[in-house]
Length: 111
Image 1 (tube, helix red, strand yellow):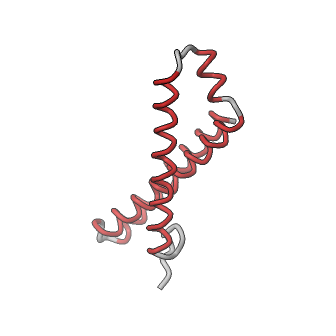
Image 2 (cartoon, helix red, strand yellow):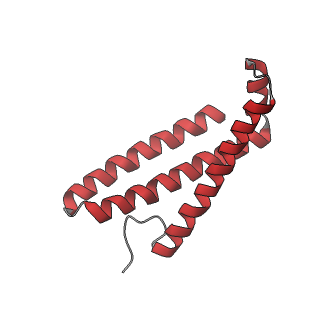
């Protein structure tokens, strides 16, 4: 049976997507920490780094990865621990709205 609220409709694909998104977020974190360790950071240096096309694209991929990672994680927690279908639907809808707001906000920040 296919889940109506799962991200990919398959537990295996959701699991793989969450692992890939975790790797992307880890690499993004390492790049950010590395930037701060290597550079004498001023606003101009930071702005130049973050507004470069490669970093804009990488940041967009990181934001999308965060969205996928958060949804799969929250969906898993809700389906495991919230037994009431009505309450679970309300919580999932609220989480979807929040995640979409964060997604659009993240895209607006970088683009």
